[in-house]
Image (cartoon, each protein chain N blue to C red):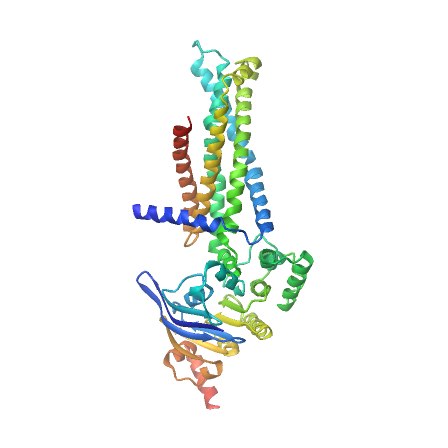
Length: 247
Length: 253
């Protein structure tokens, strides 16, 4: 198992030497990057919106439930929802969900190309397939996923607002006061560090699983599952490491 | 011309190729034939560089591929075209986009120039006017021809075909064989075809390499097939009693 781990780690690292090569044709890579950005960004907007609005809403309601009757002022809920979104939920939960959506998709797409000999066909044409197929996905991921995380923060906060204020749990002024209190700009930096790191993990790990797939449809399914599981585990490990280092 | 010298290939403990020496000649359709598991596909994949041999050398016009760095190998690959058994056409692209892909990637031609080249290739394989169709909208034989069109669009010096007739009816298979042979002659290419189709052997086998259990069992031309006394060739080509009777009849005449 240890030998296997080091084999994959070594191949994963050395594979990056192939990925970040000078493109054969910048225009083709640019077109592919834009297409990936659209797929990742627009294609994931709805799911990011849905999970964020509910996480914001649940955070607000559950903290209200826990803090009700204590001496902690009600406007703290706005502050808690905001900081939880910025520090943890927006980046981590969004990327865990995106690992399932985008990661499995990337592994299946690239793995399918491997099985249908599309990758071999490109290699024989002289295309550096590691670069052409992977680099645009990595660039698109690290550019678009932080934007999705930013959207997630806003929707989280809005979710908390619409789950509480219209029902009279707090006033509009209280919630907004909470949002404007105790703001630490460094938290936003932490959020973007996490978003960039998680985006890279989920795209690179998923592409790796797809690119080196061997066998038939069962192996492709297994690779797709591994893409999600390994991405999720690595995201959580790096979440801990970033929290340890940056807070 | 492609020359292979002492090619060995093993996968773990399984030795698939055991010292193959052969010359694939320029301007000819060179066939690799043999039973399933004889090592045909492995040899073809070694030729195109998709897998690396355990031992031995491959020369493309006297250039040893083992001595080439990755950039030079990529340059060499741009002189190769390959027709895959499953066609390997990109499903999400139209026929025109499929054929244009190598041009988009490696040339600075204008869109008009690329379209002219695509149309010329489609015309060459007898498929004018299907530019906007998707691979799933055309038949298997047409897909093969599109595969050929894509493999010749960059005017390669070497053409490789992996089982070009698999899954095709005999008439379409002959059409594909003739097309490959014509293109080989027109462009003076070195064409290597991996097949176990007997029609192909007898129609376009200008130089034949018979593999058996990873070894070169016989080499010759289609005209030598009928007169050869090689036992392995006999068992492979004239496998059925019907074909054996046919051979006897042909020789008695």
